[in-house]
Length: 226
Image (cartoon, helix red, strand yellow):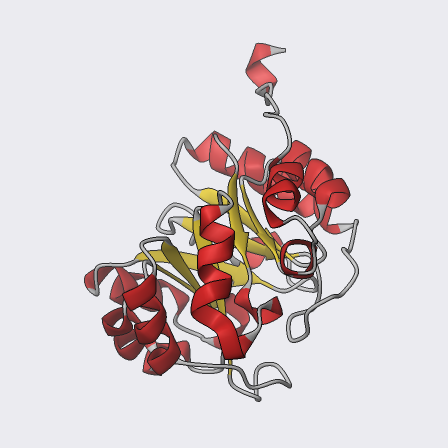
């Protein structure tokens, strides 16, 4: 699978958001990662449907919306109507994760399921075949600029094999501490969608930063090929 770069607007300049979105898409980013935080599931509060609606007017990029909120089911309709392409919610935030996936699909969006570093893959094993994407958090959600937790690489690798064994199509997204160095580790483990914030928006040369994070293609050998 080709690597997809999803710059996180959490690290953008909110006074010049349209310009900052254009800057990264012109530089080759396919997705724009939009973190919605409610001040409850995570400590910070960010943005919601209104900003997504305005972003939709200025970009054709895939709007990859990450709901770090309690009761995500209450936000799905407004986020989908605002123009999200992918809506990812946290498995930890709802007891009815399968229903949330169904609702996202009914609204015409792709469905992603996210898990925090402390959550086991077993919590979402029953959801993988229904989801379009699984997001493995490689930092604890809530703040930008945190250090990549390397012990998450085993989880990414296990998920890659789980998807392979199920013979289902499902992207693996990673979010947290991604830069040119850690992206190699994440991609080797099996991730194909990389969220990067400060490594992109803090770079002097955004196009070079995106190219470096994308890196060269990694060929994964399946167990039965070896």
